[in-house]
Image 1: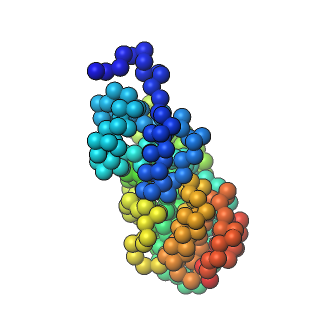
Image 2: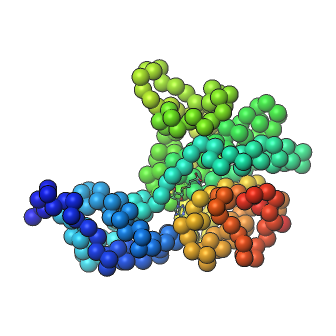
Length: 282
Ligand SMILES: C[S@@+](CC[C@H](N)C(=O)[O-])C[C@H]1O[C@@H](n2cnc3c(N)ncnc32)[C@H](O)[C@@H]1O
């Protein structure tokens, strides 16, 4: 029997169910969910309660764990608990470094084609920012050709990233010259949506990749990896394992960019700092 409408606001997640979910998410994605996240998880799981036709969060958890529906719900649970905040030109110093230091250096070394990886790409702002900077450098300064791999664990953000459609306000941090070149406005000016140009969309390959997997099947060594604002969700042991695997995917001299609040302090890795949160593979 469905709970009456007035009861919906009182529906809450028990501590026992929260702990079961937190353990499962940690095992599947490395994401730590401390007790302070209970209200957040509660809010995010309400959509799954409705989608699966359950009566309440408690009923959903019984169905999930005791009636053995975990496998089928796995991806929905992962999509629900990930935090996907992102922006174009987020932490802009990284893109200044890319444009003014890293790209000219690699061009001077004679690199003909660059391979970049955005390793927790969310809805795509990070790989499209990279594509704008690389494409402008290739055209205006005869820079190297490039290809970008963009991966995430969350399948919903990957679908949004592939579409490349954003609220117009979201592209405001893009410098006007790049916005003019790489962002399309709809013919219907009343629509507040913009789309990234097809040339940039086709320069990026999107795929699902879980950073806690033992190996990263990304092909040839990368020239640069952006793995920003995801390590913060992992514990120290997982962070070190992830950065070690990322470093193994870089060519010697390749660069790793982490989020500004992330660090590799205390880890023994073949990396040396070259700028704030930018590391070079030794
Ligand atoms: C806060 S966003 C960061 C997006 C972008 N890198 C940036 O800095 O703007 C973190 C992303 O990490 C992804 N994520 C979380 N755990 C992951 C895992 N185990 N493997 C791959 N991606 C993961 C989330 O789905 C989310 O899209």
